[in-house]
Length: 190
Image (cartoon, rainbow, N blue to C red; front, top):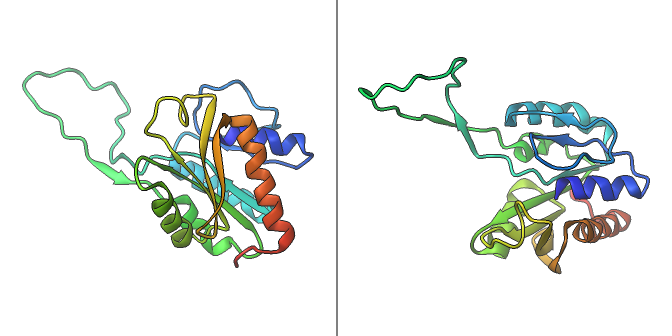
């Protein structure tokens, strides 16, 4: 979804900086995406690029947790011991840059499996988002690893628009239209 939004914005003539984790997607039309491999690297890149941006659209589904220790070498199989995987919290990128919001329009995503609107509304309010796009990722036909998506756009917690199942490219256009309308009305929270 993030690539679809970046491509749609670039087609509209917007200068786009795409910060991307490792993905298996066709390349984007956006020049020089910033490639990262961890949530911490993504946070660093967003902090570095955000001062020159008017909008921040966070569509990446960054894992909430990461291994506490990453081994440099292959761990050999040893049948005499059990392994315990310890996890640490990844940084919450939106919460980490919330203090940089100022005049900027912040758009986030909520990939949910239950209580779609309720959970998205709470996330929007907690993270100071101007718009949030909530989509149900529990089904096999939309969301991750699909060319289609569906969901709802919430405007500072209130239902703004339902997005029926459609291509991600079409959905990106609808999301950008909603963001542009919000921007033009000056309804950006500080």
